[in-house]
Length: 428
Image (cartoon, helix red, strand yellow):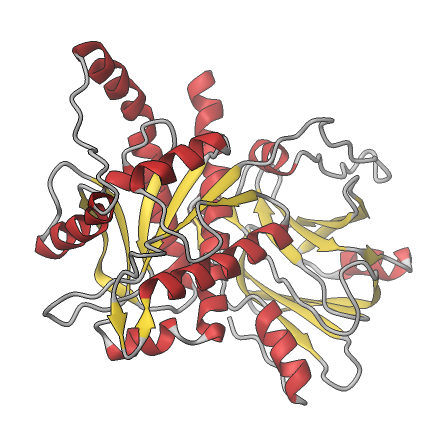
């Protein structure tokens, strides 16, 4: 998927910071948030000025014209096949124009309404098993108007079932039902006390531990800047709450980082790094999981470097525990370990779908102390390696950072939806 924009630098920077740049289709969910800022703020409602659809060969093209760009989410649901489009702060306007979509052969009934949290929802019944092929939001630099263009292609039944999300999973994720054909004016009701999952972002190093250094750039500064970017993206989407182990150039022990996550009741822990290797040509993002033995020499080296930070404060992380504690931790880890593996796989899929560079072995393991919390899925993300000139250039580029933040945010939403679904199955 490509997002097109042009015009004056002010508009370009706003659109670059705001528009989502990748199509993420993973396992059981299709989520494409597009966080777009143009003239005005998110508090100003956009208007739907036109909507159209046409079918050509095996492709259905759907286009929504808006008075300004908006955040949006797309999902394909099964039983029956439906396309769900969620738009933030949109006034629907002429209902007859929306109903006109039903003239397209591949489209059945069309319904629209407003969610209790202010998002607008369009539900399009699909006569054929269609899956999302491409999506883009194009902003007119002259008028500030926007067009959301969707292309859906006919898929086999097996492919559709693999990519479609269940309504149960969507309801659990968003806390809102769907407009039903027998009640097109149904109101959405979110649970009264729906708790957002908490993501703990852990920018590595800091203070007297600068991390890797290249060309006058410190790893501690790079990862803190990126963590702030990722926090902004996640909070703007409204799916997660976010906490950070540090929000300044402070030293935090590895043990203190895990304690901070528990104090925040974190549901997932992301430790963020951008290290350097003494030799070799390693480049691209890597997701590390906890492992008793490192997956390779590089992982062992990085684990040793990260853990060495605690020695600066004299913290001993190798205290023995009694047999009962080990058994309890083992039981907890049996539940957390597969969830962490699923998180790592989702993050890799998200980076890959956004066209960003991955290491040739994107999922590895190491004895990272900071990942040893058995009560929450934890991964360590190496955004890239400062020892690679190409990676270092990317790490210093704010636009690249935004693309990576959007990719990781997409992946977190995908993983969370899948995790809810798996939890529901386990409860049965």
